[in-house]
Image 1 (tube, rainbow, N blue to C red):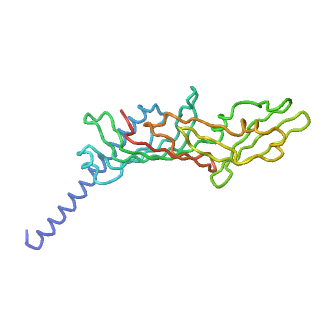
Image 2: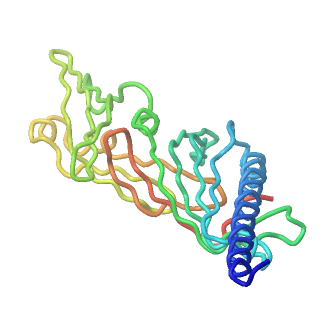
Amino acid sequence: MSRKRAPRALLIAVVVLGVLLVVVDRVAAHVAEGVAADRLRASENLSSTPDVSIKGFPFLTQWARGEVDDVEIGIGGYEASTGGGERIRIEGLRARARGVRVAEDGGGATARSATGTATVPYDELLKATGSGPVKVLPGVTAEVVGLADGGHGKVKVSVAIATPVHSSTVSVLSTLTVEDNQVRVHADALPKLVADLVGSRIRDITDFRQTIDELPGGVRLDKVEAAGDGVEITVRGADIRLAG
């Protein structure tokens, strides 16, 4: 081999080796994602396999030191606990776990921290308002019949009020807050006619709370805001169990 061809051959060899290393690293990451997804499905009793995406490069050096920097997780649907033996459906959970430590035996993983977002459909949150009309005065009943996006992070609560001579539906804008893993709905103000008719008793109908507990890995509610398809929740946690 001539002296001119030697550097070129070496360069080609280095490039080929680099490409092979990248391919091996990506294949290893893909296999690890599949294993992690299967274990997460089993540990959280999910109805379908979640999406798991390992970020950062190279993956193999992260695996060798026993900690993966960044992992994205997607769960299409999840049945959370309401704290009273019932379940509530949340959809589109997208979470990001950082500092994922893998057990030496490969049987489990925990994350130093995790944040995520999901949606609670309005029809699911509506269940927290109770079932059927509630008597607020002799001959007068009230019932929450609908929840919707009220704009600017508020939720619009529609209340059907029935009297012996007339029935109507009124809407109030309500503020959403989070406290102790509960979504709390509080009407900002009541229409004067409603307030004059039934007074503060109507707040027993318009104001309600819903526990959302036992979320994946033990994350907890952090923030909540009304949106088009439902209530968007933000979750976060530390030392989160991902699998095992």
